[in-house]
Length: 218
Image 1: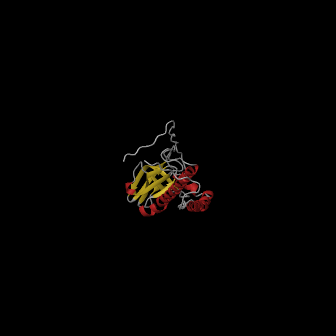
Image 2: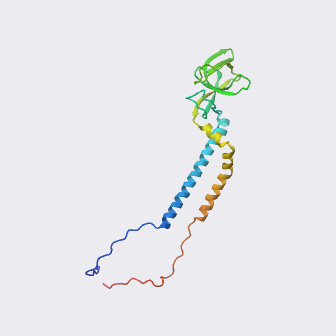
Image 3: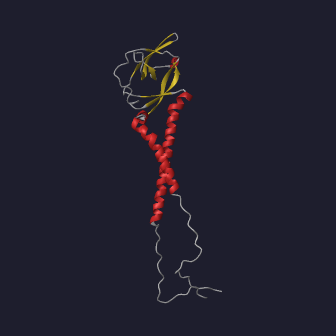
């Protein structure tokens, strides 16, 4: 049996009305995007913090390198104030002119200095070096005899990491991390609990006052 659609002369078919997402749907999408962005941000912060802890605290004990923060501009522009210098142990017998070494200078305060080697003198088992900062006009006014069988030579420079470390050690930032991070985690947890969607109840009958569609016999 062939079926056909019954048409009525003089009547126009209604044009299809474009559908747009409701305000509730847009709000739900915005909340979901904000929640996802918050989670990504928190995960990123935790990953960076864990990587910094491993690099600065665990790495030197496991792999033997050392890190130090440059405080002055004596090695500019190669190493600037606030940069972190990564140094590895090198036998003093391998030290040569041009190496950048981090060592305790032979003066009263025995402070740590990171300068370039300009002269190496060896006498038997003793190695003495003279150093100079790249940005300084003259050499350092001392000769340093290496007390150990190795010295720490620079292999990498990480710009501005020392500034970030000093900022994290400040009392204000410390309190923010101590109290703020747990508060943010609790807030995200509560938000995820409160925003869980509830399943709609199934309807068991037709709504009163709603007309059922009529059928046209073929």
